[in-house]
Image 1 (cartoon, rainbow over the protein chains, first blue to last red):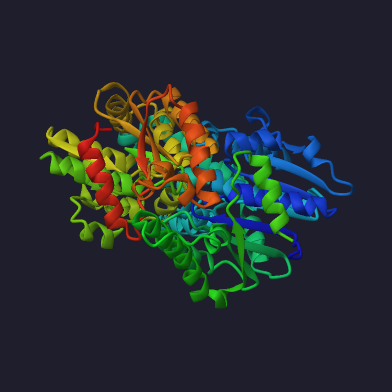
Image 2: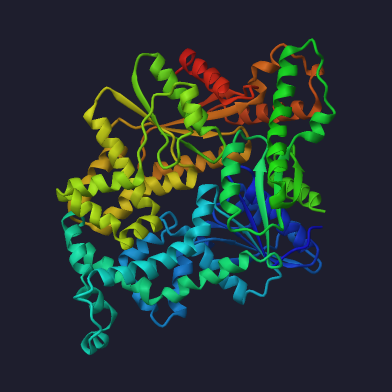
Length: 350
Length: 262
């Protein structure tokens, strides 16, 4: 089996079977005696069912106890990301936690509020530090949003670093570190620095209370910036070959070779070369045993189009082979039960 | 608006709908929303479309509201606001949606086919007006958000096409998506089951004896699923065994023109 690392990322465009593959990897590692945590962001309901994840315990780690998950030595834990839980814990651990209790921050950390990607990084880091896991498997958001995820720590850094510094510079004359200002703290600094003035232009558009709450939200995030900027360390760690395994998942049944290539090129900026290209739902084993009768034009056409799709993905793999350690093929599982998929795929990891 | 999980054929379907409406003589434009347009494909099939660019859309929105291009430019140039836009995709989505609504209000003849982001982010998009309203409470933005909500949720102007692949897991996810959108107040839906192998023209005239086991199994699963879903109004689109997208779009377009509209 491919040696496990501290963190393993499954990424790819939407609908390629990332979550099921990530689950199968987690399952086979647990079976081999490892303590594994599987973190997913938005799994299908049926997958949630087999993992025993309920929406109301989103954000909490649970150990899988179903009869399919009885391992001799290993353990499989699952976690469905919930940005709100991450925020709460952040607030609890931080001296400035109370400043995060702000209407705007609360809206942004709703499950569809827009801070999913950033909070996911913080969550992963927390479990790396405290969970005692051999491996944490992360099922990442699809496609372009995965790149958002990878860039989020950069964005955070930019947000806190450049924005604040530049904005204070912009209002340079007003911005002086007098004793009085140091005393009166960050909030008044923000007000006096002129951000408030800038925002007052927006007040017309946005309404009055927003500006005050916005300043509170920003200063709350600023006071807790270390929790966010720690995520940058994580990103550096991901680049280390002895620390992470990257699995870039593609699927044969999709006509998205183009998009997959885009994603790869973007992701390759973040990953190391000790990574794997995964081709899911491969039909090769089935197609090898099928030669349609030449008289049946329809079937000949179907056969050749299936082969062509398979080859498009293979070519893509071949072209970028220098970026990967290996290309892994997972044959399509012809079954309707998700658990059968997981077990079947798990056997292919060997 | 065409949505669904990743890889279910949203773009193919959205483009086919656009072409089918155009053929009927309707004034129609395709828009790829926050995703980059597949230029090559669009020009190959001669697709009527328009593009919206996030930065300029945001700038023109703020300029309109404040009555000054200069201030708008200046606001968006500050790293503070540009990173804010980066961090909050919902904000940008909402501005794009606002532009689309403007375009529709300016021209009552026009239909826009929106190739929307996939499931999770479609929900973010539908949730954004409410979230931002909660955030801003008063001011010009809230007036705009109200207008947007009226447009999406009240007026009989928006239809959401939820697309799925023909597997039990995928259709269940499509249901969830539909429920979630409906709970946020979206009134009109069509459900589309895409890429049905058992209905593929390539299998016509083939007797079971001609088919390999794996295709028989796939067809069997599909037929079982279709009978489970028979009391729901799913529209069916067969698997078209073509290697190139334009040919598949063309087949879908013919199907939409011949059959009942979505």
